[in-house]
Image (cartoon, rainbow, N blue to C red; front, side):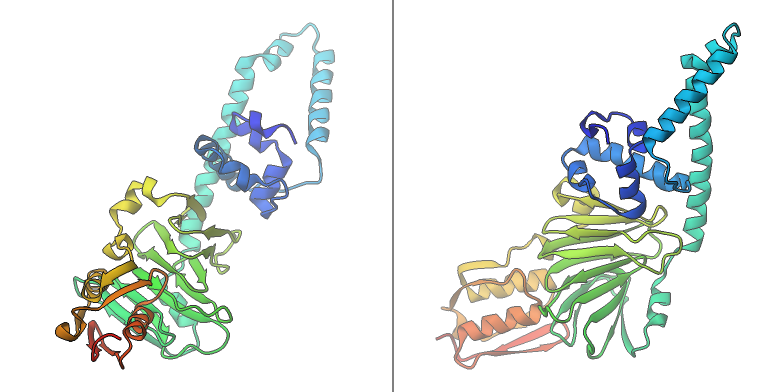
Length: 367
């Protein structure tokens, strides 16, 4: 491998065997991903080179780069010997000829790429209905036909804020060693922690795996991309293994990071800072902008924050809780857990009842 810090052109990457193995086989023995993320300009060039490798789909051989260069050198020497007095030598060695040859290769490769891309777009699309039909368990489907987000509470106390024109299918009770739901549209998820039973969100061609965190998934069937944005915790997003003729990719995301899956190209774009991505910022919901870290804050203000974030209404005994203040962290908890923590902190037999988007706090005051 050459010194990749000196790579300035796509051709530099295409001739690097370790780069080819990373793209084609997902072998990252020389830490290409870490090296790529060190520079934005570098990441753009690497992405272009990745697209070339994937587009060409050339059969891999066991011939090394050194052997290839040696063979080319011998070929040029043979041509030079047999054409010493011929103008052919000048033509083959001229910059014009090399440029023309390069343009021909690029043109053919581009044709292959767009032909392959068209084929991928028609043969690998995975729809919400297909995902739901493959699940053998009886599922409940919730459709939001209103103009406001709807709150859905799952059997494990996880909560989902389902946006208008969106659907969510989920089992009445999670069984087995995993929790799976299916999304069409947009939803903000807050998952209850259970390390022994990971949570999966299936959305178009992507699968998001979490253990306990909050994140947003945007996966409309008529849009070209699927987006996953992490607010707290850590998630792993991967391409669905049911996609034909496509390598399975995985992306790990931390807070304030996102992944954009390009459905036509079957590729992920990792966004290290969502505040630098204008399309993502433009779609940020109020719940993602609010802080649920409270230090000596009136309970009434905490309830107003919850109402604002989840678009719910909360009835509580104002006079009994008027002088109650709390210090607590509710950032990485689903709504039912948030309410449970508040009630336990207030004590005095405080409890809550939830009916859809309406919550009632029953309390005799704080301790």
